[in-house]
Image (tube, rainbow over all chains, first blue to last red; front, side, top):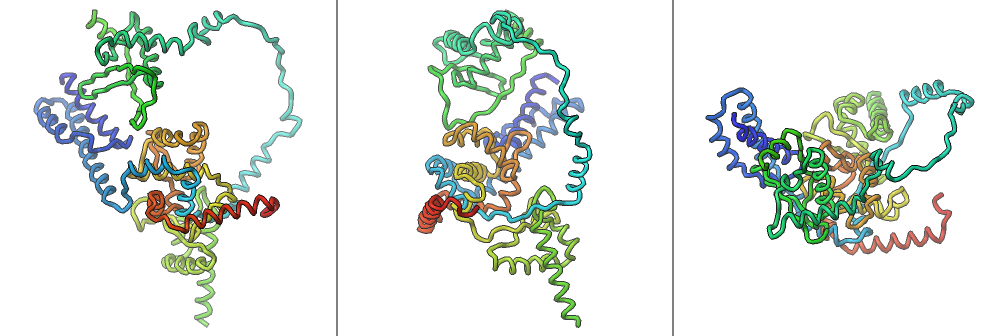
Length: 264
Length: 206
């Protein structure tokens, strides 16, 4: 099977998984469009592995439809209230009022803790196996070592300290990103992190993860086209009212070599 | 004397039901439907109704909580307060106002999202009002105590204790001010007065 077909099937399966596990809005998935693409793909599938992936994708989409049903049920239930309205209230009310809301809808459980036979047995075993006091405080035979000094350069060599402060490093990378983007709005993630060696590429990817987490840049991901674009922000900011999530991006040596050959 | 025997048997079952529900036998309080059936017999629901009537006099009630399908043998029964405590009372049994506020925010957000919400999202909302270090440790505590539960994907749900103790509809209704009444204001004044009294009499309640 051509690789792009396999990737499409896998991406559909992963997207459906994300809806089930991460609470994404199931109506964000273009179910009909995906089914159309699966229908086009079906005659081209030959092996059991391909058909198995296709079945998984169909099951995933069926599950998304189920989640859509559950969502509608929730929306039509008496418990459904506009999430935005609730969020606004949560932000607006002081802690004491919020506490009062809980207290007035709260019916605490009444129960008494009691010792059970297994607990008594466990306590007895613990007591029997407890070493005597003089055994517990026996001194360990250790040699006293005096404190000494170590140079910063030595620590850097050992990998404990970095030669450069992380903040300064991030600042430099951010400026580099802004220069690389220039007049355009964004740059390809892979293009920006590409280094002379595989290690350098991984290091740059690591720095980019900090830039994104600390609000120096944003990632724009198109899962179907497998495009990841990096957009620097004019100044570091925490984006409010925007859903954030972690994005694992795998970097393998093979992938790096392939991209390097492509851009050579 | 068949009637006396029946009454004695009924009293015995009633006290057995009270013991099963009041005393903690497992990690969670209360007892499951199948445990009660085994201990009290097939008519255990009738015994629980009688117990509920007795507990009403004390301001308590028997509550049934379904985790999956309603009417299942794994449903759990608890004894809870019939009414709700006052804010000042809740503080005396170890709850800080901030903790209660955080639980309200977490539960209301999860409920508004259809019963599940990413942990990170809940943390972000809480960090708007409370310090980050307190948010993380308090959510952990809520999870340990069963008010919230988290799956391996980092998604939060309402925990078994929240399902048993919190009236979800009332919580959301009160939050939006639907059921806000003069009573809330009166209770707040009452709570303030009680706090003042406690400050004046520091030895009270020890």
